[in-house]
Length: 148
Length: 167
Image 1 (tube, chains in turn orange, cyan):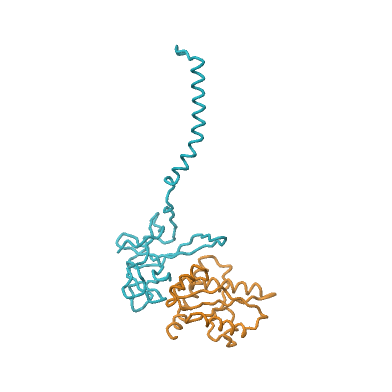
Image 2 (cartoon, one colour; image 1 turned 60 degrees about the vertical axis):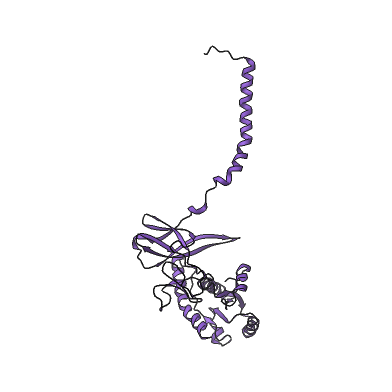
């Protein structure tokens, strides 16, 4: 499901099946890091859209949550955790290309994916690269679904 | 020259009738055209999307075929990639939609090692037979949709989806 009114209508009716929130964490870099962060964001959002399509009936893809270097990550994380825990989701997956979330233990179970610059690839290659990445993430997701 | 003489009155009559007729038809034609327009409008079913799949390379084992088309949603224009599971049944080419009938996830052929000859939906373990029939006892409530299929120069063209006709 996407974060749209129509999809959320369906979500309201099918809450027992759609039990997972997928939240992309997007880093907004400044100065020389702008382009790099844009490239990562492009990759991450493409990937999320792909995952959403694969798991439409189980996952609600949140609008990307973006933060800058100036934000206090641990505060952001705890605020998010508080708000999301009020929602009826059994699983919350954070997806990010920024390793600091899980490395620094802020969100210990954030799923980190190494960013691949897809902007210069042609469509076919882009698609197959994303497919490979999704194929690697699927076992991570299904493992979390079955254990928790 | 013919011998019948045309009187001035007749000549004017004919001319005025002719001109009047043109004017009347000029007014009536668009009205009639508008009135019958819904009948003349052709269906949009002729939209077949080309794929790169060669039909001669298809087997009885379903393979994934991707195709792309443009989609405009509000101001957001995007290129959408669609997928179909295609296989041959005798000489007939069958293309099934990968969209699960439960909540719209994407199903995979042989996605579950316990059921290698079925379509499998990873979200809630829904299963379908090869012809798209949903397996009873799993969440899906109907069979997979089917694509209209066209073959031209050995290449596969996919049309609109329709309810499964194989069952």
